[in-house]
Length: 528
Image 1: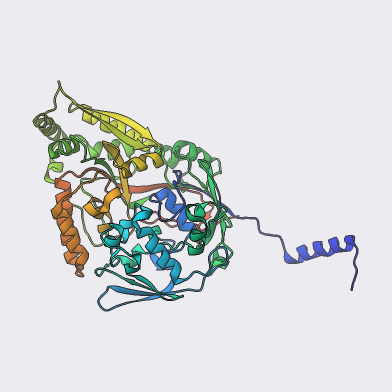
Image 2: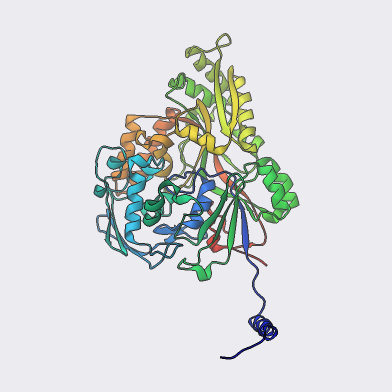
Protein backbone atom coordinates (compact mmCIF):
# COMPACT_ATOMS: atom_id res chain seq x y z
CA UNK A 1 0.00 0.00 0.00
CA UNK A 2 1.36 3.40 -0.96
CA UNK A 3 1.29 6.04 1.78
CA UNK A 4 1.24 9.82 1.06
CA UNK A 5 1.24 12.78 3.43
CA UNK A 6 -1.75 15.12 3.75
CA UNK A 7 0.31 17.97 2.21
CA UNK A 8 1.10 15.79 -0.77
CA UNK A 9 -2.53 14.77 -1.13
CA UNK A 10 -3.63 18.40 -1.19
CA UNK A 11 -0.96 19.18 -3.76
CA UNK A 12 -2.11 16.33 -5.97
CA UNK A 13 -5.74 17.48 -5.64
CA UNK A 14 -4.79 20.99 -6.69
CA UNK A 15 -2.86 19.68 -9.65
CA UNK A 16 -5.91 17.61 -10.60
CA UNK A 17 -8.17 20.67 -10.54
CA UNK A 18 -5.72 22.62 -12.66
CA UNK A 19 -5.50 19.81 -15.16
CA UNK A 20 -9.27 19.49 -15.33
CA UNK A 21 -9.73 23.22 -15.88
CA UNK A 22 -12.05 25.66 -14.06
CA UNK A 23 -15.35 24.25 -12.80
CA UNK A 24 -18.46 25.66 -14.51
CA UNK A 25 -20.58 27.87 -12.28
CA UNK A 26 -24.06 26.57 -11.50
CA UNK A 27 -26.50 27.92 -14.08
CA UNK A 28 -29.62 29.20 -12.30
CA UNK A 29 -32.64 30.36 -14.30
CA UNK A 30 -35.13 32.63 -12.47
CA UNK A 31 -38.72 32.71 -13.73
CA UNK A 32 -41.59 34.95 -12.62
CA UNK A 33 -44.70 32.83 -13.19
CA UNK A 34 -47.14 35.46 -11.86
CA UNK A 35 -49.31 33.16 -9.76
CA UNK A 36 -49.20 30.86 -6.73
CA UNK A 37 -49.88 27.23 -7.76
CA UNK A 38 -52.65 25.47 -5.90
CA UNK A 39 -50.79 22.17 -6.35
CA UNK A 40 -47.95 20.58 -8.32
CA UNK A 41 -50.03 17.54 -9.27
CA UNK A 42 -50.44 17.54 -13.10
CA UNK A 43 -53.97 16.17 -12.67
CA UNK A 44 -55.10 19.11 -10.55
CA UNK A 45 -53.46 22.17 -12.10
CA UNK A 46 -55.20 24.36 -14.65
CA UNK A 47 -53.28 27.62 -15.06
CA UNK A 48 -50.49 28.98 -17.22
CA UNK A 49 -48.54 29.85 -14.06
CA UNK A 50 -48.66 26.19 -12.98
CA UNK A 51 -47.89 24.86 -16.45
CA UNK A 52 -44.45 26.48 -16.37
CA UNK A 53 -43.51 24.43 -13.32
CA UNK A 54 -45.06 21.02 -14.02
CA UNK A 55 -44.14 21.23 -17.71
CA UNK A 56 -40.46 21.46 -16.80
CA UNK A 57 -40.74 18.53 -14.40
CA UNK A 58 -42.91 16.03 -16.32
CA UNK A 59 -42.74 14.63 -19.82
CA UNK A 60 -45.82 13.54 -21.75
CA UNK A 61 -45.90 11.11 -24.66
CA UNK A 62 -45.21 14.17 -26.79
CA UNK A 63 -43.63 17.39 -25.61
CA UNK A 64 -43.13 21.01 -26.66
CA UNK A 65 -40.16 22.01 -28.77
CA UNK A 66 -38.60 25.44 -28.23
CA UNK A 67 -41.20 26.92 -30.59
CA UNK A 68 -44.00 24.93 -28.85
CA UNK A 69 -44.54 22.56 -31.79
CA UNK A 70 -45.19 18.94 -30.67
CA UNK A 71 -42.23 16.57 -30.82
CA UNK A 72 -41.55 13.07 -29.39
CA UNK A 73 -41.34 13.02 -25.61
CA UNK A 74 -41.73 9.92 -23.46
CA UNK A 75 -42.80 8.16 -26.67
CA UNK A 76 -40.03 7.83 -29.24
CA UNK A 77 -42.46 6.74 -31.99
CA UNK A 78 -46.09 5.87 -32.68
CA UNK A 79 -48.44 4.35 -35.21
CA UNK A 80 -52.02 5.35 -36.06
CA UNK A 81 -54.59 2.85 -37.32
CA UNK A 82 -56.21 3.31 -40.72
CA UNK A 83 -59.48 4.41 -39.13
CA UNK A 84 -57.67 7.05 -37.04
CA UNK A 85 -59.01 5.69 -33.76
CA UNK A 86 -56.11 3.62 -32.35
CA UNK A 87 -52.70 5.04 -31.44
CA UNK A 88 -49.84 2.72 -30.46
CA UNK A 89 -46.89 4.39 -28.73
CA UNK A 90 -43.43 2.94 -28.24
CA UNK A 91 -41.94 4.39 -25.05
CA UNK A 92 -38.29 5.34 -24.94
CA UNK A 93 -36.09 3.88 -22.21
CA UNK A 94 -36.13 6.47 -19.44
CA UNK A 95 -36.52 6.73 -15.69
CA UNK A 96 -38.27 8.60 -12.95
CA UNK A 97 -36.06 10.98 -11.00
CA UNK A 98 -35.73 8.31 -8.27
CA UNK A 99 -34.25 5.85 -10.78
CA UNK A 100 -37.36 3.68 -11.24
CA UNK A 101 -38.16 2.88 -14.92
CA UNK A 102 -41.08 4.67 -16.59
CA UNK A 103 -43.44 2.06 -18.02
CA UNK A 104 -46.66 1.91 -19.99
CA UNK A 105 -48.39 0.98 -16.72
CA UNK A 106 -47.53 4.44 -15.34
CA UNK A 107 -49.44 6.00 -18.24
CA UNK A 108 -52.39 3.63 -17.81
CA UNK A 109 -52.44 4.44 -14.10
CA UNK A 110 -52.30 8.19 -14.84
CA UNK A 111 -55.10 8.21 -17.41
CA UNK A 112 -57.34 6.13 -15.16
CA UNK A 113 -56.55 8.32 -12.18
CA UNK A 114 -57.39 11.67 -13.77
CA UNK A 115 -60.64 10.29 -15.24
CA UNK A 116 -61.76 8.60 -12.03
CA UNK A 117 -64.73 10.69 -10.82
CA UNK A 118 -63.53 10.29 -7.23
CA UNK A 119 -60.41 12.27 -8.16
CA UNK A 120 -62.61 15.24 -9.18
CA UNK A 121 -59.98 16.50 -11.64
CA UNK A 122 -61.41 19.70 -13.11
CA UNK A 123 -59.56 19.28 -16.41
CA UNK A 124 -60.53 15.63 -16.99
CA UNK A 125 -62.96 16.47 -19.78
CA UNK A 126 -60.10 17.45 -22.09
CA UNK A 127 -59.47 13.70 -22.38
CA UNK A 128 -62.98 12.81 -23.50
CA UNK A 129 -61.79 11.86 -27.02
CA UNK A 130 -60.47 8.64 -25.42
CA UNK A 131 -62.85 5.68 -25.62
CA UNK A 132 -65.27 5.56 -22.66
CA UNK A 133 -63.54 8.50 -20.95
CA UNK A 134 -66.67 10.63 -20.69
CA UNK A 135 -68.88 7.76 -19.56
CA UNK A 136 -66.42 6.75 -16.85
CA UNK A 137 -65.69 10.30 -15.67
CA UNK A 138 -69.39 11.14 -15.45
CA UNK A 139 -70.20 7.94 -13.56
CA UNK A 140 -72.38 6.53 -16.35
CA UNK A 141 -70.00 3.58 -16.70
CA UNK A 142 -68.19 1.66 -13.96
CA UNK A 143 -64.80 -0.01 -14.09
CA UNK A 144 -61.75 2.04 -15.13
CA UNK A 145 -60.42 -1.03 -16.95
CA UNK A 146 -62.96 -0.09 -19.63
CA UNK A 147 -61.00 3.05 -20.47
CA UNK A 148 -59.46 2.87 -23.93
CA UNK A 149 -55.88 2.88 -22.63
CA UNK A 150 -53.84 -0.29 -22.09
CA UNK A 151 -50.26 -1.44 -21.68
CA UNK A 152 -49.42 -3.94 -24.43
CA UNK A 153 -46.06 -4.50 -22.73
CA UNK A 154 -43.84 -2.36 -20.44
CA UNK A 155 -42.75 -0.16 -23.35
CA UNK A 156 -45.86 -0.19 -25.53
CA UNK A 157 -49.00 1.86 -24.83
CA UNK A 158 -52.22 1.62 -26.84
CA UNK A 159 -54.84 4.39 -26.79
CA UNK A 160 -58.24 3.95 -28.41
CA UNK A 161 -60.42 6.96 -29.25
CA UNK A 162 -64.17 7.34 -29.58
CA UNK A 163 -63.71 9.06 -32.94
CA UNK A 164 -60.79 10.18 -35.09
CA UNK A 165 -59.37 13.30 -33.42
CA UNK A 166 -57.16 15.47 -35.60
CA UNK A 167 -55.58 17.33 -32.70
CA UNK A 168 -54.92 14.29 -30.49
CA UNK A 169 -51.13 14.21 -30.87
CA UNK A 170 -50.83 17.88 -29.92
CA UNK A 171 -53.17 17.27 -26.98
CA UNK A 172 -50.61 14.79 -25.65
CA UNK A 173 -48.22 17.66 -24.87
CA UNK A 174 -50.73 18.93 -22.29
CA UNK A 175 -50.19 18.33 -18.57
CA UNK A 176 -53.45 16.37 -18.19
CA UNK A 177 -51.77 13.60 -20.20
CA UNK A 178 -48.54 13.48 -18.18
CA UNK A 179 -47.69 10.21 -16.46
CA UNK A 180 -47.57 10.13 -12.69
CA UNK A 181 -45.38 7.64 -10.77
CA UNK A 182 -47.66 4.81 -9.74
CA UNK A 183 -45.24 3.57 -7.08
CA UNK A 184 -45.03 6.98 -5.39
CA UNK A 185 -48.71 7.90 -5.62
CA UNK A 186 -49.72 4.55 -4.14
CA UNK A 187 -47.18 4.93 -1.32
CA UNK A 188 -47.93 8.53 -0.28
CA UNK A 189 -51.42 9.26 -1.61
CA UNK A 190 -52.18 12.98 -1.89
CA UNK A 191 -48.82 13.75 -0.23
CA UNK A 192 -46.90 12.39 -3.22
CA UNK A 193 -46.51 15.95 -4.57
CA UNK A 194 -44.69 17.24 -1.49
CA UNK A 195 -41.10 18.13 -2.40
CA UNK A 196 -39.73 15.37 -0.15
CA UNK A 197 -41.73 12.74 -2.06
CA UNK A 198 -42.38 13.96 -5.61
CA UNK A 199 -40.62 12.27 -8.49
CA UNK A 200 -40.90 13.19 -12.16
CA UNK A 201 -39.74 11.96 -15.55
CA UNK A 202 -38.86 15.29 -17.17
CA UNK A 203 -35.68 17.35 -17.35
CA UNK A 204 -36.17 18.77 -13.83
CA UNK A 205 -37.36 17.53 -10.45
CA UNK A 206 -38.95 19.72 -7.79
CA UNK A 207 -36.97 20.08 -4.57
CA UNK A 208 -38.57 23.02 -2.76
CA UNK A 209 -41.91 24.79 -2.49
CA UNK A 210 -42.15 27.73 -0.11
CA UNK A 211 -45.73 29.01 -0.52
CA UNK A 212 -46.03 32.58 -1.84
CA UNK A 213 -42.25 32.78 -2.10
CA UNK A 214 -40.65 30.35 -4.54
CA UNK A 215 -40.59 26.88 -6.06
CA UNK A 216 -37.22 25.33 -6.94
CA UNK A 217 -36.46 22.59 -9.44
CA UNK A 218 -33.08 21.03 -10.12
CA UNK A 219 -31.79 19.23 -13.18
CA UNK A 220 -32.89 15.60 -13.20
CA UNK A 221 -29.74 13.46 -13.59
CA UNK A 222 -31.92 10.52 -14.68
CA UNK A 223 -33.52 12.43 -17.56
CA UNK A 224 -32.79 10.61 -20.82
CA UNK A 225 -31.40 13.76 -22.47
CA UNK A 226 -29.72 15.26 -19.39
CA UNK A 227 -26.43 15.76 -21.26
CA UNK A 228 -28.10 18.42 -23.41
CA UNK A 229 -29.88 20.25 -20.56
CA UNK A 230 -27.81 23.34 -19.78
CA UNK A 231 -29.65 24.99 -16.88
CA UNK A 232 -28.88 23.37 -13.51
CA UNK A 233 -31.58 24.98 -11.38
CA UNK A 234 -34.87 26.79 -12.04
CA UNK A 235 -36.37 29.10 -9.42
CA UNK A 236 -40.01 30.04 -10.00
CA UNK A 237 -41.39 33.17 -8.30
CA UNK A 238 -45.23 33.29 -8.01
CA UNK A 239 -45.58 37.02 -7.17
CA UNK A 240 -48.74 38.47 -8.81
CA UNK A 241 -47.56 42.10 -8.47
CA UNK A 242 -46.38 42.68 -12.02
CA UNK A 243 -44.85 46.11 -11.34
CA UNK A 244 -42.85 44.78 -8.39
CA UNK A 245 -41.62 41.85 -10.47
CA UNK A 246 -40.58 44.21 -13.26
CA UNK A 247 -38.42 46.13 -10.77
CA UNK A 248 -36.75 42.84 -9.85
CA UNK A 249 -36.22 42.07 -13.53
CA UNK A 250 -34.58 45.44 -14.12
CA UNK A 251 -32.38 44.82 -11.08
CA UNK A 252 -31.16 41.56 -12.63
CA UNK A 253 -32.97 39.31 -10.14
CA UNK A 254 -35.34 37.75 -12.73
CA UNK A 255 -34.45 36.28 -16.13
CA UNK A 256 -37.97 35.83 -17.52
CA UNK A 257 -41.16 37.64 -16.50
CA UNK A 258 -44.15 35.81 -17.96
CA UNK A 259 -46.29 38.96 -18.11
CA UNK A 260 -45.71 42.66 -17.45
CA UNK A 261 -48.29 45.38 -16.83
CA UNK A 262 -49.49 46.95 -20.09
CA UNK A 263 -49.33 50.46 -18.66
CA UNK A 264 -45.53 50.13 -18.54
CA UNK A 265 -45.07 49.34 -22.22
CA UNK A 266 -43.82 52.78 -23.30
CA UNK A 267 -41.42 53.06 -20.37
CA UNK A 268 -40.05 49.53 -20.89
CA UNK A 269 -39.56 50.00 -24.62
CA UNK A 270 -37.55 53.11 -23.85
CA UNK A 271 -35.51 51.76 -20.93
CA UNK A 272 -34.94 48.07 -21.80
CA UNK A 273 -36.06 47.64 -25.45
CA UNK A 274 -34.06 44.44 -25.99
CA UNK A 275 -35.94 42.73 -23.15
CA UNK A 276 -39.49 43.51 -24.28
CA UNK A 277 -41.25 40.70 -26.17
CA UNK A 278 -44.80 41.23 -27.48
CA UNK A 279 -46.07 38.40 -29.66
CA UNK A 280 -49.35 36.90 -31.00
CA UNK A 281 -50.89 34.52 -28.50
CA UNK A 282 -53.77 32.06 -28.87
CA UNK A 283 -55.91 33.31 -26.01
CA UNK A 284 -59.24 35.04 -25.29
CA UNK A 285 -59.91 37.39 -22.37
CA UNK A 286 -63.56 37.49 -21.28
CA UNK A 287 -66.10 38.24 -18.56
CA UNK A 288 -68.25 35.22 -17.79
CA UNK A 289 -71.85 35.32 -16.55
CA UNK A 290 -73.11 32.90 -13.94
CA UNK A 291 -76.25 31.88 -15.84
CA UNK A 292 -77.40 29.87 -12.82
CA UNK A 293 -78.05 33.11 -10.97
CA UNK A 294 -80.68 35.70 -11.72
CA UNK A 295 -80.74 37.98 -13.61
CA UNK A 296 -77.94 36.49 -15.72
CA UNK A 297 -80.23 33.70 -16.86
CA UNK A 298 -82.02 36.43 -18.87
CA UNK A 299 -80.45 36.81 -22.36
CA UNK A 300 -81.62 40.44 -22.47
CA UNK A 301 -79.47 41.27 -19.45
CA UNK A 302 -76.45 39.44 -20.82
CA UNK A 303 -76.73 41.17 -24.18
CA UNK A 304 -77.18 44.58 -22.59
CA UNK A 305 -74.00 44.18 -20.56
CA UNK A 306 -72.08 42.98 -23.60
CA UNK A 307 -73.30 45.98 -25.64
CA UNK A 308 -72.19 48.35 -22.88
CA UNK A 309 -68.52 47.30 -22.93
CA UNK A 310 -66.39 49.14 -25.51
CA UNK A 311 -63.66 46.72 -26.56
CA UNK A 312 -61.92 49.32 -28.73
CA UNK A 313 -61.38 51.61 -25.74
CA UNK A 314 -60.02 48.76 -23.64
CA UNK A 315 -57.54 47.54 -26.27
CA UNK A 316 -56.60 50.94 -27.73
CA UNK A 317 -56.62 53.21 -24.67
CA UNK A 318 -56.30 51.00 -21.59
CA UNK A 319 -53.89 48.29 -22.77
CA UNK A 320 -52.14 49.69 -25.87
CA UNK A 321 -50.01 46.57 -26.40
CA UNK A 322 -51.53 45.18 -29.60
CA UNK A 323 -54.49 43.17 -28.29
CA UNK A 324 -57.38 42.78 -30.75
CA UNK A 325 -60.99 43.60 -29.75
CA UNK A 326 -62.94 40.35 -29.36
CA UNK A 327 -66.60 39.60 -29.99
CA UNK A 328 -66.42 35.81 -30.32
CA UNK A 329 -64.82 32.81 -28.62
CA UNK A 330 -62.04 31.53 -30.90
CA UNK A 331 -58.99 33.77 -31.58
CA UNK A 332 -57.94 34.52 -35.16
CA UNK A 333 -55.52 32.11 -36.87
CA UNK A 334 -56.47 29.17 -34.66
CA UNK A 335 -55.71 25.99 -36.59
CA UNK A 336 -57.62 25.90 -39.88
CA UNK A 337 -60.55 27.88 -38.49
CA UNK A 338 -60.04 31.15 -40.33
CA UNK A 339 -61.44 34.39 -38.99
CA UNK A 340 -63.75 34.45 -35.96
CA UNK A 341 -67.45 35.26 -36.06
CA UNK A 342 -68.23 38.98 -35.75
CA UNK A 343 -71.86 39.86 -34.82
CA UNK A 344 -73.60 42.62 -36.78
CA UNK A 345 -74.17 44.76 -33.70
CA UNK A 346 -70.42 45.20 -33.23
CA UNK A 347 -70.36 47.32 -36.40
CA UNK A 348 -72.79 49.90 -34.99
CA UNK A 349 -71.66 53.00 -33.12
CA UNK A 350 -71.02 52.74 -29.40
CA UNK A 351 -73.76 55.31 -28.74
CA UNK A 352 -76.25 53.05 -30.54
CA UNK A 353 -75.10 50.07 -28.49
CA UNK A 354 -75.55 52.01 -25.26
CA UNK A 355 -79.08 53.05 -26.26
CA UNK A 356 -79.99 49.46 -27.03
CA UNK A 357 -78.45 48.29 -23.73
CA UNK A 358 -80.64 50.72 -21.76
CA UNK A 359 -83.71 49.54 -23.67
CA UNK A 360 -82.98 45.86 -22.96
CA UNK A 361 -82.36 46.54 -19.29
CA UNK A 362 -85.67 48.38 -19.05
CA UNK A 363 -87.44 45.42 -20.67
CA UNK A 364 -85.80 43.15 -18.08
CA UNK A 365 -87.14 45.30 -15.24
CA UNK A 366 -84.13 47.51 -14.48
CA UNK A 367 -83.89 51.29 -14.57
CA UNK A 368 -83.02 54.41 -12.52
CA UNK A 369 -85.38 53.40 -9.70
CA UNK A 370 -84.25 49.78 -9.76
CA UNK A 371 -80.67 49.62 -11.08
CA UNK A 372 -78.96 46.35 -11.84
CA UNK A 373 -76.25 45.71 -9.24
CA UNK A 374 -73.76 42.88 -9.17
CA UNK A 375 -70.24 41.87 -8.13
CA UNK A 376 -67.59 41.86 -10.85
CA UNK A 377 -64.62 39.84 -9.60
CA UNK A 378 -61.11 39.61 -11.01
CA UNK A 379 -57.79 38.11 -9.97
CA UNK A 380 -54.82 40.20 -8.91
CA UNK A 381 -53.15 42.05 -11.77
CA UNK A 382 -52.66 45.69 -12.63
CA UNK A 383 -54.16 45.10 -16.08
CA UNK A 384 -57.17 43.18 -14.74
CA UNK A 385 -57.87 46.04 -12.37
CA UNK A 386 -57.55 48.72 -15.06
CA UNK A 387 -59.88 46.78 -17.38
CA UNK A 388 -62.39 46.25 -14.57
CA UNK A 389 -62.35 49.96 -13.68
CA UNK A 390 -62.94 50.86 -17.34
CA UNK A 391 -65.76 48.30 -17.65
CA UNK A 392 -67.30 49.58 -14.42
CA UNK A 393 -67.45 53.12 -15.87
CA UNK A 394 -68.94 51.84 -19.14
CA UNK A 395 -71.62 49.90 -17.28
CA UNK A 396 -72.41 52.89 -15.07
CA UNK A 397 -73.12 54.89 -18.23
CA UNK A 398 -76.11 52.58 -18.94
CA UNK A 399 -77.33 52.59 -15.34
CA UNK A 400 -75.59 49.46 -14.05
CA UNK A 401 -73.63 49.30 -10.77
CA UNK A 402 -70.74 46.81 -10.87
CA UNK A 403 -68.94 46.43 -7.55
CA UNK A 404 -65.35 45.36 -8.13
CA UNK A 405 -63.81 42.59 -6.01
CA UNK A 406 -60.17 41.53 -6.30
CA UNK A 407 -58.93 38.09 -5.19
CA UNK A 408 -55.62 36.27 -5.56
CA UNK A 409 -55.56 33.99 -8.57
CA UNK A 410 -55.91 30.68 -6.70
CA UNK A 411 -58.95 31.85 -4.74
CA UNK A 412 -60.49 33.54 -7.77
CA UNK A 413 -60.39 30.42 -9.95
CA UNK A 414 -61.52 28.17 -7.12
CA UNK A 415 -64.68 30.28 -6.90
CA UNK A 416 -65.17 30.11 -10.66
CA UNK A 417 -64.82 26.33 -10.61
CA UNK A 418 -67.40 26.14 -7.83
CA UNK A 419 -69.78 28.46 -9.74
CA UNK A 420 -69.58 30.87 -6.80
CA UNK A 421 -69.69 34.29 -8.51
CA UNK A 422 -71.96 36.65 -10.44
CA UNK A 423 -69.79 38.07 -13.22
CA UNK A 424 -66.07 37.36 -13.29
CA UNK A 425 -62.94 37.89 -15.28
CA UNK A 426 -61.61 34.76 -16.98
CA UNK A 427 -59.35 33.83 -19.85
CA UNK A 428 -58.46 30.84 -21.94
CA UNK A 429 -55.16 30.11 -23.64
CA UNK A 430 -54.87 27.30 -26.19
CA UNK A 431 -53.83 23.90 -24.93
CA UNK A 432 -53.61 22.77 -28.55
CA UNK A 433 -54.03 24.68 -31.80
CA UNK A 434 -57.61 23.77 -32.66
CA UNK A 435 -60.85 25.78 -32.20
CA UNK A 436 -62.39 22.89 -30.26
CA UNK A 437 -60.08 23.79 -27.37
CA UNK A 438 -61.95 27.09 -26.93
CA UNK A 439 -65.49 26.05 -27.84
CA UNK A 440 -65.56 23.02 -25.56
CA UNK A 441 -65.55 25.46 -22.62
CA UNK A 442 -69.22 26.11 -23.38
CA UNK A 443 -70.35 22.50 -23.69
CA UNK A 444 -72.68 21.26 -20.96
CA UNK A 445 -70.42 18.23 -20.39
CA UNK A 446 -67.42 20.43 -19.61
CA UNK A 447 -68.71 21.02 -16.09
CA UNK A 448 -66.35 23.06 -13.85
CA UNK A 449 -64.39 24.83 -16.58
CA UNK A 450 -67.67 25.93 -18.09
CA UNK A 451 -67.55 28.46 -15.28
CA UNK A 452 -70.95 30.06 -15.93
CA UNK A 453 -72.63 26.67 -16.58
CA UNK A 454 -73.89 27.82 -19.98
CA UNK A 455 -75.92 25.14 -21.74
CA UNK A 456 -77.49 25.00 -25.20
CA UNK A 457 -78.62 21.64 -26.67
CA UNK A 458 -78.03 22.71 -30.27
CA UNK A 459 -74.52 23.93 -29.42
CA UNK A 460 -73.78 20.60 -27.73
CA UNK A 461 -75.13 18.68 -30.71
CA UNK A 462 -72.92 20.56 -33.17
CA UNK A 463 -69.85 20.00 -31.01
CA UNK A 464 -70.62 16.28 -30.81
CA UNK A 465 -70.98 16.18 -34.59
CA UNK A 466 -67.64 17.88 -35.21
CA UNK A 467 -65.96 15.44 -32.84
CA UNK A 468 -67.21 12.51 -34.90
CA UNK A 469 -66.17 13.96 -38.26
CA UNK A 470 -62.93 13.05 -40.05
CA UNK A 471 -63.46 15.83 -42.60
CA UNK A 472 -61.56 18.89 -41.33
CA UNK A 473 -63.54 21.33 -43.47
CA UNK A 474 -66.77 19.88 -42.10
CA UNK A 475 -65.43 20.15 -38.55
CA UNK A 476 -64.63 23.83 -39.06
CA UNK A 477 -68.08 24.52 -40.53
CA UNK A 478 -69.84 22.83 -37.62
CA UNK A 479 -67.75 24.74 -35.07
CA UNK A 480 -68.41 28.05 -36.81
CA UNK A 481 -72.13 27.31 -36.51
CA UNK A 482 -71.74 26.40 -32.84
CA UNK A 483 -69.73 29.54 -32.11
CA UNK A 484 -72.42 31.74 -33.68
CA UNK A 485 -75.00 30.20 -31.32
CA UNK A 486 -72.85 30.90 -28.24
CA UNK A 487 -72.05 34.46 -29.34
CA UNK A 488 -75.67 35.24 -30.16
CA UNK A 489 -76.62 33.78 -26.74
CA UNK A 490 -74.08 36.09 -25.09
CA UNK A 491 -72.66 33.14 -23.20
CA UNK A 492 -69.93 35.49 -22.04
CA UNK A 493 -68.51 38.94 -22.88
CA UNK A 494 -65.42 38.43 -25.03
CA UNK A 495 -63.18 41.46 -24.53
CA UNK A 496 -59.93 40.91 -26.43
CA UNK A 497 -57.67 38.37 -28.10
CA UNK A 498 -54.32 38.09 -26.39
CA UNK A 499 -50.77 38.97 -27.17
CA UNK A 500 -48.02 37.68 -24.88
CA UNK A 501 -46.18 40.48 -23.03
CA UNK A 502 -42.96 39.24 -21.50
CA UNK A 503 -39.61 40.50 -20.32
CA UNK A 504 -36.73 38.28 -21.44
CA UNK A 505 -33.16 38.80 -20.29
CA UNK A 506 -30.75 39.36 -23.21
CA UNK A 507 -28.56 36.74 -21.47
CA UNK A 508 -31.24 34.07 -21.99
CA UNK A 509 -30.38 31.88 -24.95
CA UNK A 510 -32.79 29.55 -26.76
CA UNK A 511 -35.95 31.56 -26.01
CA UNK A 512 -38.40 31.47 -28.95
CA UNK A 513 -41.60 33.55 -29.13
CA UNK A 514 -44.57 31.32 -30.00
CA UNK A 515 -48.38 31.50 -30.11
CA UNK A 516 -48.76 29.10 -27.15
CA UNK A 517 -46.37 31.17 -25.00
CA UNK A 518 -44.76 27.99 -23.68
CA UNK A 519 -41.03 28.20 -22.98
CA UNK A 520 -39.48 25.09 -21.46
CA UNK A 521 -36.26 25.55 -19.46
CA UNK A 522 -34.90 22.43 -21.14
CA UNK A 523 -34.15 24.35 -24.34
CA UNK A 524 -32.52 27.38 -22.77
CA UNK A 525 -29.22 28.53 -21.31
CA UNK A 526 -27.81 31.69 -19.76
CA UNK A 527 -24.76 33.43 -21.15
CA UNK A 528 -22.03 33.33 -18.50
